[in-house]
Length: 134
Image (tube, rainbow, N blue to C red; front, top):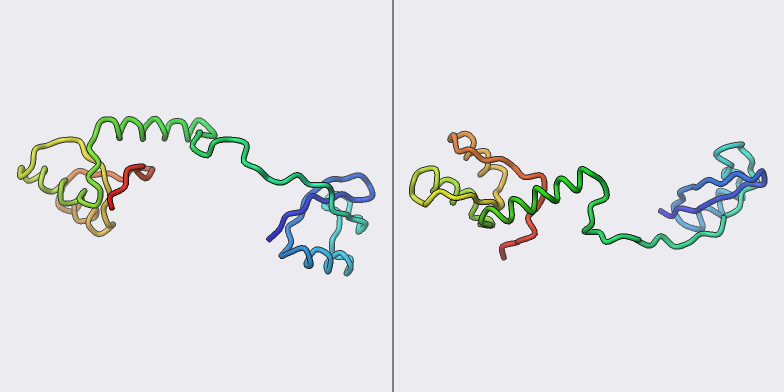
């Protein structure tokens, strides 16, 4: 899919999505590209600037992302990352076979469900850890 900025002969600016550049030309020749505001069929592609990211993708965009980033920092600073050993570690701590400590990691859905069914208090985090086990 390709998005074009469009301009009609009545001075309206709008955009349109097309399968490809040939798709735009074909639809235009058939009179099927019309102004989204006034309906004029006299539509041309407007000059477009390339879409370039203007911000660091790691920078939060809104208050919710800022809150999630703070939560991630708190979790990562105050718990041990145990990777895919999360379910086994949580179970061992619950049964007293390992010292109790704050952990975070990854678990298959069926393993997490079994922990909950067995009364082991765990909860999903709303983000993926930046640390990854190999």
